[in-house]
Length: 248
Ligand code: NAD
Image (cartoon, rainbow, N blue to C red; front, side):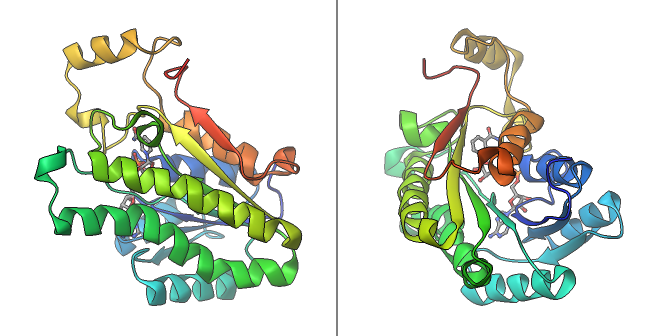
């Protein structure tokens, strides 16, 4: 029970096979009360109900500062406090450089990068007041390698931006007792990826992964748990790869 008595807000945690959802389940198993924040409000409420009555599902569009503020207010009204924020929501578009128009660029940057800023801004005043908090932000191996199978250059740029933003936040918020870290997963089998992989693609991808398998949502959830808990009390500004050794 690593999160007994703690409360957590997790964005992008409604999707059934997603990383956020698996993390919400793991956090609940470790004693946390969890707020599932998602664009899909009905999905967020259903996911929270599945976890149990002490958890809440809240509609939230991370690209809209007012929606983020309203979601943070709702979390604090429900729980009275928030110890952990996971900026997990994200989208991707499998486009090549010359296919990216201003609309694609705006949308992918908005959700993956601006969303981290807006949702953090909504929770940080409360965390500062309590002089405690752990924020973890979702980046990607796409930021480190300049692309992946499903993410275009705009996705790589957004996820690389998350690394810079999170480190700057870690520097500024450390004196207030707030830790900020990033996870950089490799290929994790979720709705974003899993359904679109052919058997041939799986074989080819595994050749580049020393642990010889694709990742599961639970692999990333375990890393988020470490970053959210006191086990990582002296870790801030860190980037943790969860990729089976893809970058070795
Ligand atoms: P997913 O599609 O299962 O989950 C994404 C969730 O984000 C969904 O529930 C969706 O409704 C929500 N969402 C989308 N736009 C939103 C918005 N504007 N406001 C609030 N919520 C919104 O995908 P996943 O694979 O679980 O992805 C979770 C995160 O992990 C994303 O940031 C993704 O970029 C990142 N990531 C995934 C992989 C992978 O291989 N699956 C690898 C590296 C990083």
